[in-house]
Length: 327
Image (tube, rainbow, N blue to C red):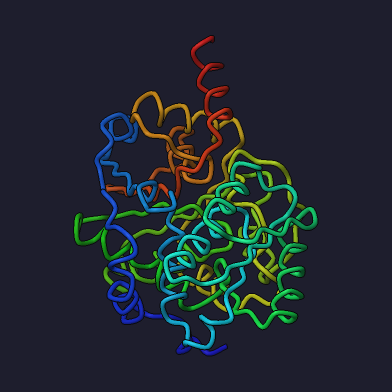
């Protein structure tokens, strides 16, 4: 696909105008503890305060608000590991749209119940996001629904890119941005916008080590499938799609560094955020903190860590914090 068809900075500005009444401008706060550890100014971009608890509200809103009247009448469908489905369910509820969310049976129950509480029809199918995607395609065809893809869609990517606009408005001197990396919608949007504003900005993608689909695809030079495994960063699970058109080439173009973090490092980051930052951050949102605490993120400052979400199972966080306190 020609690069000219990729979303650009103008698309991101248009997205911000469309969604300004549906999402919030999230705070960018300096972390004293992480700045001390890094030896550079470290800031947290807190997408945890979005209406659905994660950045996904931006892309879902931009896609749904752009649908035709006929598409809105028929309803929408999505496949998700949790946060995207929750965002689609919420934005559909606001517009009075029917929504169907397909997800794998591996998705934690607290995420499933959150989507149902927003009025979505939830279909649990298979043991991976790829299997849930196949089910979603089948239902889409049967019911003539519009697919709201979790990442590989120009409207979704442009919506996520609005995060970069806010970062540079609040901190124009930003030198490095670390972004959770999974399907690549968040990374592609933020990286494209950031590099368009300042080409010298360093973009770091951070993934969990147990199943880093995008990073394995980058290593292979093409989208590849990898087995899904349980992870504290469950929202980063899932493949990037063998027919990926946007996020794989955009990630390959804009990424300066890629980092993998272990489950132990992710858990330590979640605990650090709770005890030192007084923030509830899910595993997928904590991977940037994990990379920094583990000494893997060594980059010029000011450094911005995109904290992508805070939808964590309270029992999981309790157990992690209790284990740390009991040491």
